[in-house]
Amino acid sequence: MRRASLALDSVGHASGAASASAAPASCSIEVASNCQNGHCLWEKDPSWQRYIAALATFPGVLKVLECCGGLSTGCVALSKLLPSGAVEMAGHWDIDECLRPFLEVVHRQCGCIHLGKDAGDLLQLDIGAIALGHVLIAGPPCPPWSSLGSRGSFEDRRASVFWRVVDIVVDQARRGPLALFVLENVEAILHHAKGAQRRAIDIILEELRTELPSGWQITVHTLNTRDFGLPQSRPRAYVVGHRCDLFGPQPMPPPIQFERTVQLKNLLNLADKRNCWPNTTVQAQNLRDWKQHYGTSMNDSAAIGTFAVIDISRTPSGRTRWTSTSARPGIVQCLTAAGPDLHVFSLGEGNVDLSLDRRLRGSERASLQGFPPCVRSVADEGPRTKRILGNAMSVPVIGSVLGTAMLRLVGCSSPRSIVAWTGSSNASSASSTAGAAPPAEGSDGIDGDPPDGVTDTDPFTHDIGEGVSAHSPSKKRRLHKDIGLCT
Image 1 (cartoon, rainbow, N blue to C red):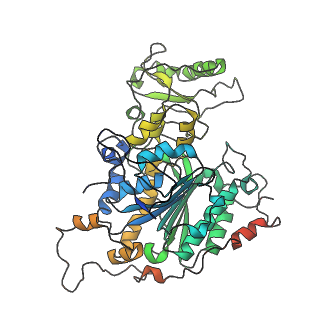
Image 2: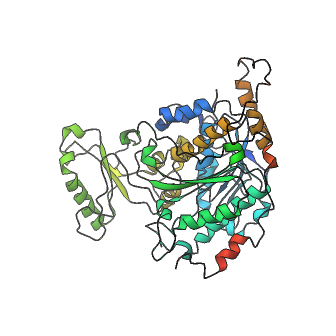
Image 3: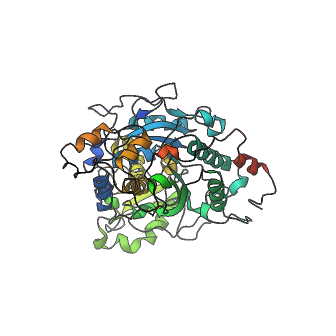
């Protein structure tokens, strides 16, 4: 079965541009076919391949909304999971205008992508005018909870964007066919902020459970990129909400971890030996500290073929207040919007004339997040790339979250129910089953007995209520100063 292919011509140039101008209500999403030919090594993991095999005949066409959409990682992952033609963009919003060249190589011409402080600002958006979607994926700003941010929780004005995403989720669930959402943020959102009586996640979950229509289940998972095929330590929290009539009444299980991790050397461009020395005297001293820290491994011939990736703005020596002892060979620390300033050097080759001793490239950062070659080709060494990749979700992680949900969907709902929910049938999937055995006598070939607790009826008959007004209950609650969110 043909997987989806990227909007690139034969020489790798983008065939269209992402735009915020008026265009169709949705547009198809396609991902580079050359990612399937060994370029994204994590895709070869048996855990991922099981998703591909089980979803090969997915019958519907999903319209996807991405709020604070960044690099459109959710759509990239879904397009890798599902057959060609099964994913359409219903809308993408982000205030970062610098995403445009990245999104241009991911998507075909699409008027559903809205970038910049005007078109991409959710706080200025009339949420009642948003096109309806089946799946919503969002990565709201993390500084209110991040260790690198203010840690002001809901006192940080940027937390208002998270609340806006909650309002959009509720509005979509009440007005239309939304049946799955995934909200991603830093792990610290699961902890108590300084001086807070309650965890931020508990307040958010209470809001969702209060405002969503009946028949929704919400689960929270903590997942680390290093457990899903990539050598990067990146713990993140994922809030997964699903409609029980389609996905079943049980909480969504965490995705199965990958069986192996791609070795760091396979994500590095070993032919690129250009020296890019640190910019400051302090960074140069930090690099010497790190090499001393790794002295045993650098002189151990058994370590040949392995590499250390370190943050040269910090030192393991305790010489400055910016210390770090968390780095270990073969595992890269969490990529962030601020960078960090990562340097890679060879181990097992002694202390001089190393085969690799340079800054980590932008394309290598993209590989550490699981992105396909088209994205890696746009990534440079500038702060823009560091910020965009540091803010992105890891493709195999969000892909595994979505893959687990899709497996639940096809296990709990018949093909006819899925097509009724999505409003259209995937012709590519239908053609792939043309040679399948005929249905048993007395069967129409699509219906089966639903699992216990699941009613196999028209998904649109659930209680959707009214949309969220401009003065939604959630907004009113947030205006009160006495609700004890952060006091």
